[in-house]
Image (cartoon, rainbow, N blue to C red; front, top):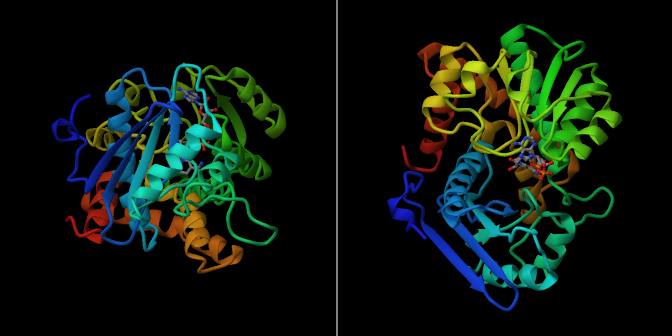
Length: 349
Ligand code: NAD
């Protein structure tokens, strides 16, 4: 495997840990980007990568994104992320999750894990059998905790509304067309909120059955994964995987707003400028999708209740507006404005 130092996404990460456990089949990377503001927090992704290097790049990019996300959300947390390299069949066993938990534990609290793509609340219960440095665990009624997905979805929905207000001057999503990429946990919440407000949805997922199920439930139309990035709509909401906005996809976009949950939507920093050049308003991903980590942080630190979580999530639109305002004053794209703000907060300006 390539060393982290040689990769463009290596950003003076404080540590990158590689683990294998032959008995359980665990192969994982934990990247700790920064602990400047507190322990490095960020979910565990369980994914099959064609090449090991892709997993490393994902861990580097996602952990840096968590530093920025936690800082911009005003949380006392640094940024980290783990990836578990799944086999082609995505075999996941309790033994593998325990082995992962043991490795998290060995870091002594420098890294706190939770759910990300491919990991569920049930998986976190298994991980928690080997470590206390875990959040996203089930909660009893009224308590903070559990699946971060619905909290992320609420923040994304509020962020979409703020973007629509900023770019189109509309106070409601009623009658607007939203192109939703992905039909997973966060996309489901976004779809339900948006439909409740009268939005029209086009939904795509590489898993057609999931897209169909969500479209039936929320009242949208299924489109193919190939189509979703180029259909005419008011908002494109990327809620699948990252690096989907690049020099080949941006020229085809037919939307005035891109606002969604997926981490690392821009393939390169230049893609933020490409969106600005096309006058497409972009909601920086790690700002709009902070609802889940806000819930995770409040659960882990035990410093608030459900109403405080909601109050913190309701702060997301205000942060987005600050970014867009600074961007329009300086002629800078929102992603670069957000990066500069986050870098100042984590002492890396
Ligand atoms: P999920 O695994 O529940 O859903 C992701 C969905 O995307 C899956 O249904 C998958 O089949 C689909 N998908 C993958 N590639 C696709 C493609 N090319 N086209 C269409 N669909 C595709 O994951 P999730 O928890 O809903 O997270 C979605 C995104 O939001 C991820 O990028 C994640 O990192 C990010 N995010 C999630 C949270 C959270 O709280 N879950 C928080 C912050 C950010």
